[in-house]
Image (cartoon, rainbow, N blue to C red; front, side, top):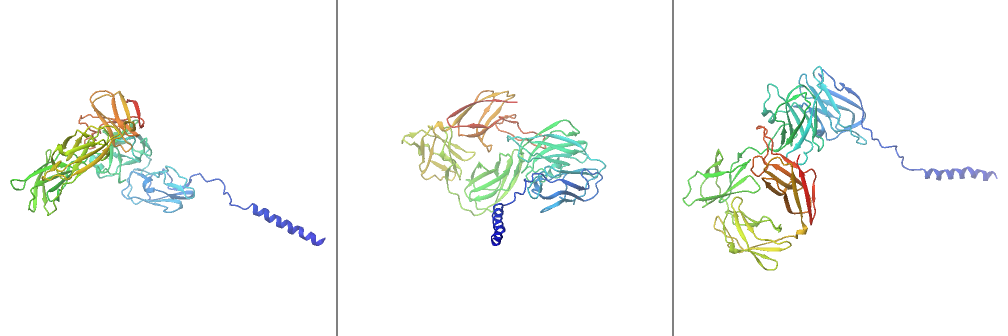
Length: 533
């Protein structure tokens, strides 16, 4: 009996071991931390006055880390030498070591954006701003407004908004070399902004889509928007600015020889170059030019080939005249090459275009043949586009058809009296049911002429019409996709959108977008009313 009683505690311990095994598992750890870090102490305190030091410490209640500080941190006014900000990894203390000499009687602000977060759960301490003044008070005036983009339906994010103090040393050219007095950025697609901790005074207000993030306007890379007149702070006004990319001023680039009979003249800005050779050449010397479709380049061709060390040219663009010397080299002569600008699918209203690497001077229409799929010949018209060196082939097209375009030897002749070999290109059209149409009614257009455009999601123009009076606009053969619809007030009546100029205080021509994106579907007709405001 005693031996049996000894087995009872052993059996109980054995059973308890099974129960303990059943309860094993990973602890839940409690609810997820969603609380951002909290500041427990700052030295000096935030919004301190009479600041004279060069170090700032901000202590948090937990370990923090910094993310994308170079993109998120906005220091206003900007500093010539960027401060050293730590931690580089994690710490409970954020330290700012100032390397710049601070201006007297100036309020500084450090807006950290979304760069501060806790180390474990990455909870953001959003838009923390540390402010101090080297004077006896904190500047507290504000200014707000909105930034738009002249060509886009919404401005790019972020856009920098800047104030230059219009003091006795101020001049417009400062924006090309000096950092502004105050800065902030837009944070969402609405383009709204607020400048804070400003002091009373007169300012130049402008916005930059600043590619280099250096707060200095570089026209070749940056977009700019501005308020035409100087503004006063304090102000109850809500300011609006429109970003645009300036057309660079005309600048002539040194020409170069790229073929035995071929020289290229490069330039920046808008130009209509007139090239005149000043060097002595044989009596039978002739030349011709055409523009490059994609680059700011004029192609200059000449014959016969010259054996000389250099050629001297006079290059005129309106009243601007430059003299250029081209060093000549022994290079190979170019041979005629013909290619199609676009093959595959053509729309019924498209023109089939052929380009050539050498200047085209004539054609023989009898040696062009367009044949439909049923072997019937299609009547063809040919034109030479001397501006861009194209041969344009016009022929009536029917929907859902295939066409073979054949060039027999001698169809095209170039500047050097060379002709093409036999060439063939295949194109086709799609059925009308593959496309959509839109019929547009315009309301409240307050002046003419205007340009009505449909652009794709990358803002490439897919259809446009120039109007000198109000009438319905009909776009057909639209491929199924989502489009933006816009009108341009063509105030200088040159048939294109024109940008602005900061130094001339000229705003870009106004573009107004239809308020929503339009979806075009196959075999579908849309009727839309565009009411302008």
